[in-house]
Length: 253
Image 1 (cartoon, helix red, strand yellow):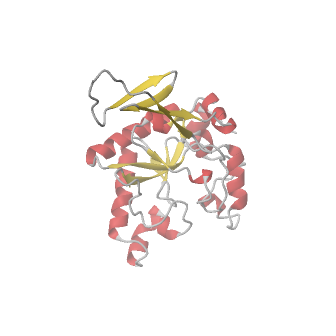
Image 2 (cartoon, helix red, strand yellow; image 1 turned 90 degrees about the vertical axis):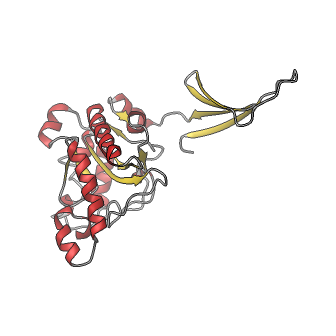
Image 3 (tube, helix red, strand yellow; image 1 turned 90 degrees about the horizontal axis):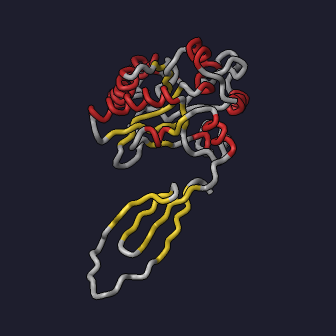
């Protein structure tokens, strides 16, 4: 069971002839738990114990993006089977973590996006990725060894995801939670996902103008906050170079 358990406690209704307003909602926090009181019903949200992997990320000083950036959405694909190798490798982890200063930069990019269109938000697919998970992705990728690094960093060298300074994301409609049409899904392996091949893919009819405009919007707001994209994945952005990441941070194992 992942994350939230809801419990209902029914309170007695106050008498004394006092009338009760309908749809009265009050939110309060008590002992670290959030309670929503609607009329005479308290809805209390409590969290499951933090899993071992998530605790490691917290102990490493990483921060939860959804706590840092209100309105940001997370679909942690490697915590599901909806990914290129069909396995859940994050287990109980459903929240996305990054280094604090990277999260701060992402918050800036999110602000730039919402200044352009307040109905849009980020939908994050992956952030920090422990080296142990990187090895699984490398082993599971069914590509020749010489082109594997185009899609997954060699765990012997490490990925910027392993330092918590890279993020995979899209732009979503905040009202539906659905990604804008980017032409391919996350982790699509092929030229239609390559920013470097967009002109060619347009000519060949593999992607269309609206899909490219959506990608350009993502690149524009991420670049405004200092992130750099890569040529083979429209969804991937780095906050630091490999050299700077090594100087500033430790690999999360």
